[in-house]
Length: 327
Image 1 (cartoon, rainbow, N blue to C red):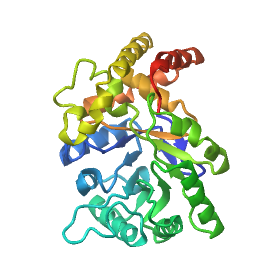
Image 2: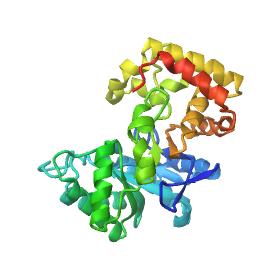
Image 3: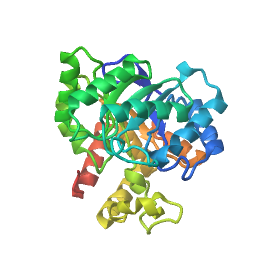
Image 4: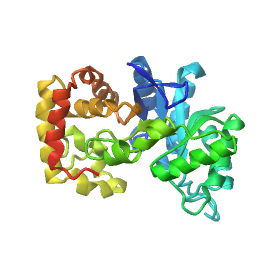
């Protein structure tokens, strides 16, 4: 495992990290999470990603219970959470749903720390942009979160380049803590934002990336070529919105061709896809999702393919994916 600096910060993240979206609480309980976190750390993973909205806060509970059981030194691991959607609670939903207002943010961090059983998180993200709250208000709240010691670095997730730059400039003007990182989707079928839209920010603000969905929600594993497996993400009722993409015949034909190339390199299509995402120089860490240790270990096998991505292999991947309308 190699480690990469997070944007312009001095913090180093493992190039592969472990996330909890969909899996924790829904498919993985605290005991299983403890085993998976231990296996990941044993392989050199030091970054573990979460969010308030994952399983309505229960994902943080599962991860926090695992951290407590493992008793790792706090300096050894990096933890993130994200805010925007809020949690379903009794009473009015005003000021706590789909927002980045100051009231919500300053209370949300306290809730996450309680569920994670931590004194602070290392990384905190604005999980989506909020067009109704002034960016100045959000920037000040996120900066205060860091000043108060409840988080160490802040950033965004799926924000436009324009909004990220605006947030950075506001923080710079008023001497506030600046956004350091962005968490975008990035895989062979979803590339334009990382490769084109954000490109100016890599130089102007040294933006770092912690990318999610390297396997396009499982499409790039090849498991959907013959339908939707019963235990897969696509079979989950709350994930039904993914089905049109997961069962797309052209995409699955492309996956089959990528699988042939991966086999020639001594790996599988999932490992090839993860290694490809790691090839982007601005990516600090690629977040993996796994529902069991076997799946995690298989994905970590991508590291063995990373050095095999020669210019010729990368050109072959580009040619294979040419038929896809890349987003």
